[in-house]
Amino acid sequence: MKNALKEFCLTLNIKDVGIASAGPYQELEERWSKRLAKGHITGFEEQDINRRINPKLTLESAKSVIVCLFPYLIGCNETSNLSKSSFSEDYHLIIKNKLDMIGKFLENKISGFEYKAFVDSGPLADRFLAYKAGLGYFGMNSHIITDQYGSYVFIGYIINNFAFEPDQPLDKTCMKCGACVKSCPGGAILGNFDINPLVCRSYLTQKKGELSELEIEILKKDSLVFGCDICQDVCPHNINVKCTPILEFTENIKDSIAYQELQEISNKEFKRRYGNRNFSWRGKGLLIRNFKILNADNK
Figure 1 (spheres, rainbow, N blue to C red):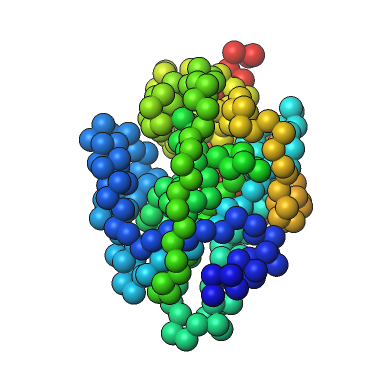
Figure 2 (figure 1 turned 90 degrees about the vertical axis):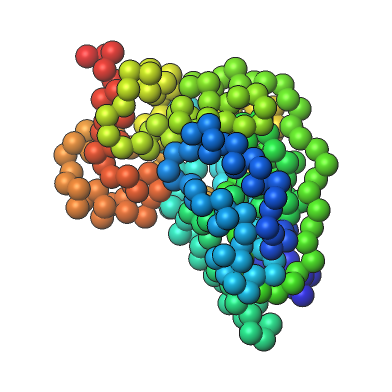
C-alpha cells in the first residue's frame, strides 16, 4: 500500500512522500517546552503541548502520518516585493486540494480509511514531521532542507488510521556555515538550530497592530512588504536547486503588489482580486502599513 501511495502521488507531481509514526513525539515535547518557557511563540502555532506531539488527539484512530513536500521555487525576480512563497495562488488551497485527492484515493483502496489533512495551520509541527519521515534535514534557520529543492518547500500532512511503515530520519544536518545567522534582519536565528520567531521579519510583516521601534527597524532591512526570503536566499544549500515540478505553482504568477493600487481599492475589492493569495490573509491595511514603514525615509 505504501508503494501504491507513492505511485499515486507521482501522478500529482508529488515526488517526496514519507511516513512518520503516530507519536507521541517525546523529542519534540522537550524542544517545544523550552521554546514555550522562553516565550518564543507568535500565537500562530498550536500551543497545547499534548496536541502538538500526539496525533491521536486530532484523530483518535491515528496509526501513521503521511507527509508530503511541495517545492515552490520558480526562480527569482529582483524587483518583486512579495516573498517567493506568495507568487502563485495561495499554497494552502493548492496543497489541501492535493492532500484530499490522496485521502480520497486511499479511501477507495483501504476499507474504513479515516484521515485529516493539514497544511501550515494544523496542530502538529510540520517541519518536525518532515524530518521524522526522512524527507529532509534541519538547517540552522529551522527550515527543512532537501537535496533537490533546498529549503524552498511547503509541507503537508495527513493523519490517518492505516499503519503505514514509518520512514527513518536522515542522519545529517546543514553545513552550519552561519550565513543565515549573520544575515537575519532581526537576529531571530539563534545559531543552535532554534529561532526566536518574535523578531523574524517574515512574522513582523504579518503581525497586526502598531510595531515597536525595534520591529520597525527590522522591517526596514529588506524591501519585501510580505514575508522574508533572506535566510533562504543566502543558504548555500539553495544554490542551483531545482524549480518546482508542480504546475499550479508556476501559473497565474504575481510577484509584486503596488502601493497605489492598495490605496485606490476598497477592502471588498481587495478580497475579490486577491482573496485566493496567501498575502491577503491579514488584509490590505497590513500591507499598506508595511509600505508606509518601508517608504518612510523617502518622504
